[in-house]
Image: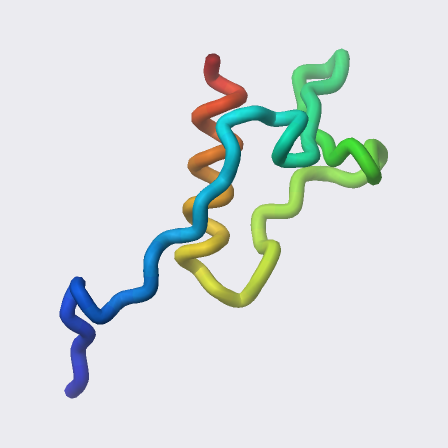
Length: 66
């Protein structure tokens, strides 16, 4: 079985800490929506990279909580 050492892993992606810069807003029903597609729901799976999706979701959650 193979394992990756922490030093050999790629760096986590960086996202801004602002919903507008991320391309999202909170509508009148307190739902997170995309600025360019306001009728569509939040997309949890942007890519096939689970870590990228997790870091993106953390950026959204951190901003929407404040």
